[in-house]
Amino acid sequence: MIPRNPTTIALRAEDIQDMNDQIAERKAKASQSKDASSASAAANTTAQEGKNELTEGLMPGKGVPQTTLDARKGKSRNERLGL
Image (cartoon, rainbow, N blue to C red; front, side, top):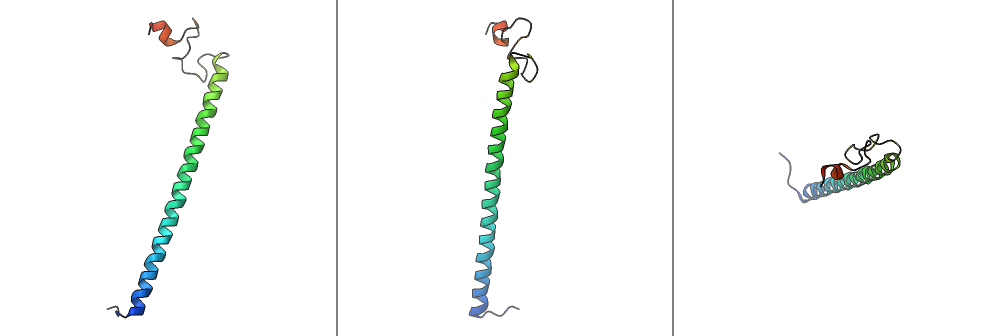
């Protein structure tokens, strides 16, 4: 059985506080990495959109969904469908 003297109890409280601090640091690091990955994903999306704009006029259907441009008639899908 563990002795219940004030020194042991104080050490346990310090150990628990240290563990809680370590957990908080790990959570902070994890949230920072999530923020960085979401920022990276947003940058990649923006870069892909820019690429699509550049290739839309040159190569319809390449890098651009076919719904945005009809290569044969030069009309958008909504225009062809009358929407």
